[in-house]
Length: 476
Image (cartoon, rainbow, N blue to C red):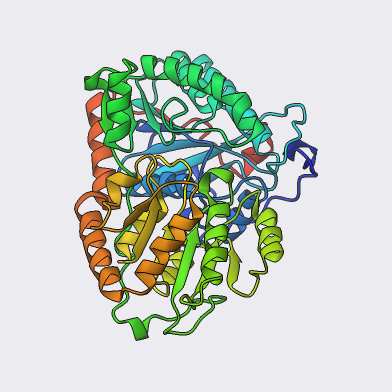
């Protein structure tokens, strides 16, 4: 059934944001508290707010996945380096127009009214288009007010949809600043459409990506695979493409000190001696949740396997997953936990024995890094950048995508072999420690900012530096 576009919904009263909110992401920003906006202008339609009420608002329109988590984490870590950031994000109904994101950074939440776009994706498509138009309008205002030189560069986070690439092209042209693209999922190389909307948008997305790559000052990709593909296809010269992977906060995702000491998070099933197999991710076709359910069905029919299954995350296909579990008679064997906050995910990782990444396409995948950081044994599909992290037989097991029987075989093998689980877990954590530490990733970005950023005026006041409470009634 088609859901209402977000523009059709009545807008509730803005939520009050306490000054001492956890994560420093929930308090309104005051112009007096922020440094001059002479740092980075970051454009992203994706973000994960650590405040629960902000998260609840966000989940009304889009599921939170690894891309949102990574962008938020990067923003916070770069702020800790002392880099001022102005982050332009979509504004959902009930959200304020300005937020403080850290000691040096603020968010401007934007949207412009558009005609309703009815989709099954919670009005998400309309939200993206509204954000893109609002960003272009906001940039034009800065140009007219002669604030276009207030930032040393523009950093745009792009996915497989065309809007982010188009916004990058427009913002760079209007503000005349160097543009850095981070491509979280390439429409040209990685993305394989699974839905009608995906097939409809893939052509425009590839065209927009090609033009944005040609115009960008520097292109950041997550894996060596994408760098090689871009260069081989003549899309980017080798000197303009850099690999900066996703990162994981190693202090948050840690191995349990002892199996018996790991506490079960609320809602997690099973006893200490019962193997638990985890799916953690969005409920979307490309994430392969259906293949996980089919593998669980296969294993449930094998008397040799007595384990349980846990699925956590959110997405438009979560109701379909519930229906499929009921149809297969798996409601007692598979526990659906829904959306979990990051600390809850970290706690859950400590209670499971095997983590399955059944993606049908994947640029890199934050869940696999978190699982390895927690020393969990991983079964992953041989797609995208996953083989760069999961080395078959060393840090986990790789199987072909869309093959539930192979997933089931690999899970059963690990469930029966605690020595291999321990060996894979240790090797996986060591590998993540060496390459994917979030602090090191932030330093890489900081070095890139210093390299390509152009000097800004000595002092330029942040755009809209008036009191955000007084200015909250003005249009975004």
